[in-house]
Image 1 (cartoon, rainbow, N blue to C red):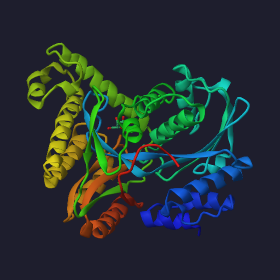
Image 2 (image 1 turned 45 degrees about the horizontal axis):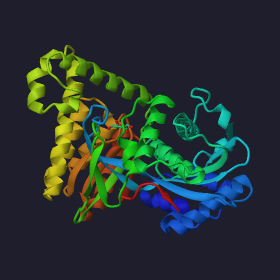
Image 3 (image 1 turned 60 degrees about the horizontal axis):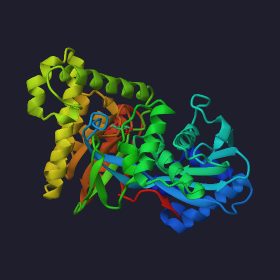
Image 4 (image 1 turned 90 degrees about the vertical axis):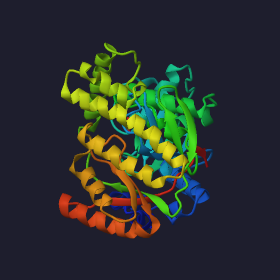
Length: 426
Ligand code: GLA
């Protein structure tokens, strides 16, 4: 078995198709993702040469995935979020071409082979599939006057499980932005890369997401989470010093199905609730309200469903502010309790959890040594994030894993993760 499979099995990933692809490519994938950047770079160049003939002049880049610690479904409601970038993410090897062709290859979707397109075929709606993420970013750059004067060849490889709620798509978007900046000399800041990625997601891929994912990825800082006010984009880094504990991600492996349309539906419900509230108080976003103000004005919301959605947005925002205060005072237990409360609100008021994520958190809460546990990301499947004391991690993985499999019928995967930096040229 190639070494990469060993890495993924170690991290709890089910390697299946990956290994088949790597074996089919006959790549010598020696412990690359365990041994640091230099080897990753070399291996990415090997992929590139294998796919496109040679790797002369190709450069290698990385953009992380992200996990959100607290502040869910607040970023499109003018609230606060508290995510961090991970050390897992997406690698890209890229080289400019002399013509206007674009050639894409993803090691993760190797069965699709090389996908060709062109700089003059970038308008939205022409294609579907993973290349819409890099293409959406190229299209957005062009729309802002940053037109690529020639095409490129691009190979990507991601070690974030796709569709797991760890922002594999935002990672590809920020990665593409970083590649365009480096290869074509466009002057954009990391914050611009976040905004461009979000714009591409909204207008090219039809998901009305907020700014959290792209911001966390583009602005990531090792060992820090980002406390971001999504209303103003003001932010501060908060060191995550978890003495004797780690962040553990449990992936439900539930396919997300209609998640994007349900996501957009939640967003519209909140927008309608905001309009109703604006008839009785002067606010720009739900994030402007305290819990007390919400209780005072909530009768303006005429549907019980919209009331629940807005209540989550308001309470979750305040919870996030409190959680960061707790962390600053090193009150980790309080931080964990707020994480648990966040899950309950996402389950009961926002209704984005489902039996898989509820099982993972409820089983986690039973375990001694679990400081806090909640779903993370959009929900409807995907992952939970837990803070677990070191001595409880093995027990956590064994017990939660067993109970999940018994109840749901298939296995969850577990990742003990580290907080990493934003996009990098390797
Ligand atoms: C997805 C979106 C984000 C955010 C979260 C929920 O990850 O991309 O903008 O809304 O869901 O907090």
